[in-house]
Image (tube, rainbow, N blue to C red; front, side, top):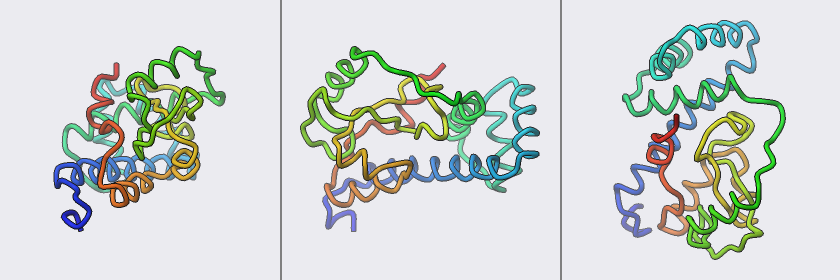
Length: 180
């Protein structure tokens, strides 16, 4: 399938790893939303833990019964802390953010790689419904079609990879390692 779509194995591996990380994160968030007692317990524990990766290790072990690699614990910890800090309102970003993203993306949609203008849609890479505006480097510009199709699903990027043979966005593991 990879060869038929001219997809380098390392590209496919990266997007599959990113998708699996996000699906694991999504599962944890959905579990916490469904059970208020679990949410309160893990919120309290998140405030006691000294390191986000340590917190991610505990929560994935207890709620998902699985182990991750260290890089995934690091990312998951930051995402989970953002989940617990999420505010109920959206930030209104200045036009400069949109202009800077357009320049960084060389006027191309971050998923399908089609040309876009400064009227492209601002999108949260890790969906807003999970982390709000709490993460740095979590914005990208998408064309109308990709933004409407992506919604809060990580599977759209896999579909686009198979359709286009290209990975249009920066991998999650690189874009979020710089978070503070």
